[in-house]
Image (cartoon, rainbow, N blue to C red; front, side):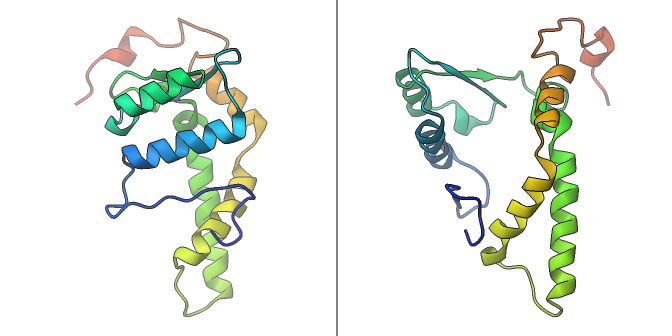
Length: 158
């Protein structure tokens, strides 16, 4: 986690994919930083990945004032604020930062030790309050807009 933002955590799995243990570590970190409670509840919007729907995660969230809301399957490209307004810009910023690092470090490869620092620089470029607000607006989550999608949005695309 060299050069990662202060307080950031990193979790790896043998497969490289998230799992329920990673999600629980993230939930614990979220709770430590944000301090939700039964009197001050917080919402977390999630995709339907199996790691988010364990009994352990649901129980933890209930005990700590966290409401989990999962998106319907195959809808995150339209409904998840981060997918709609943030990840494309983050990917471009990370690629540009990594390209700059490789030009400055000719002949070297990016290793696990550089990733957190490169990501941190890219994140600071890409993460803006405007993108967060836009993500919720253009998905119809806030302010609530039930008319954001047309009937065609729900048709099967082959």
